[in-house]
Image 1 (cartoon, rainbow, N blue to C red):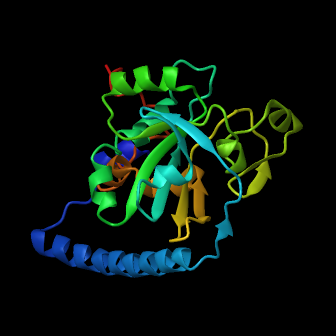
Image 2 (cartoon, rainbow, N blue to C red):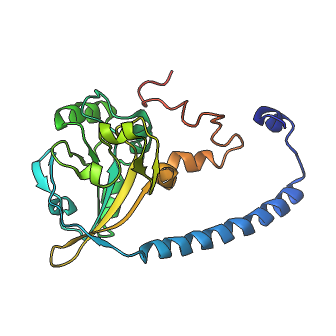
Image 3 (tube, one colour):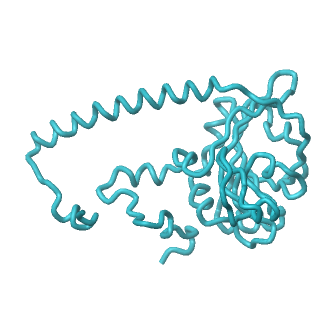
Length: 239
């Protein structure tokens, strides 16, 4: 099988007319995929909900806030489970790759009745300096004193990890990490009752990374080889 580099160097070159015909053929497939994605999104919204009975208190720039207060007057809340364990001095570089897409989201989501927030187990004293270093402005809360990330399958106890049966991405698997990435969605009704509506993990969060979708457009694609994201660095540490 030819390598990606060989494929690039020997790539087929045709006339403009032939290119347009090939592009139109592929466009039909893209439109089919878009319709299927819209259908899948509708089915996602139709999934049943689970009532959130547990109380959580988070710490953020404005002090302590309850889970309900994170909605900030909106009825929908998106939480990004940012990998940042209490003993670490920096957030996960891969989550940071995703977080570079977050700035500027808030104002647009707010106008669709949605609030966005990142949550990590690290204390605020570690989150804030790292956030400042990265130049991020999105809201980032600490769940250091509650079980939120554990309850939503994004953090695991030492006992769970050692047992080899960590429940992540809706299945039991071996895991040598205390934290993983994910996104969870919640809804609050007019009575103030909160419901868990959706969560996704691992490659389920692919669609939240705009950079990856742009890379999918270029001839080399993501160009990651055998070890996905081995190239990723904090944005202030690329050579």
